[in-house]
Image 1 (tube, helix red, strand yellow):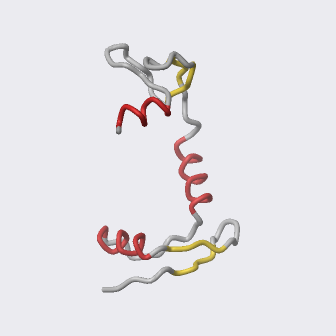
Image 2: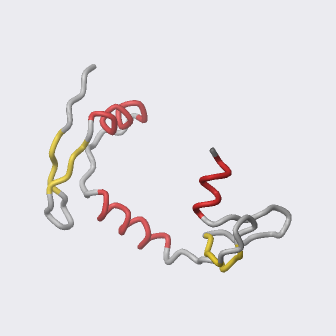
Image 3: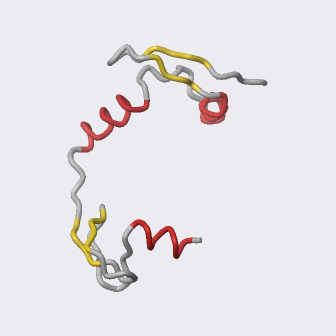
Amino acid sequence: MSFTDKTLSCKECGKPFTFTAGEQEFYQQKGFQNEPQRCPDCRSAKKSERRGPRQMFKVTCADCGQDTEVPFKPTGDRPVYCSDCFAKNRA
């Protein structure tokens, strides 16, 4: 089945957003019956509303020594990196 991008309207803010062909394929693979009702911004806001505020932990990057924050509590048994060093070490 061939998918094409669709423009939908967000039920929260009313802004138009694109439901891409790739997203449509993903929805079909997962067996979802309904198209998304909210734009990506409203979807993430709704998700964080349910989850509550994310707790961040202050750490020092093991690579460059820069102070940063991470969304998990470091246990001390593995190095923790800032986002730039994490991306650099991942590649």
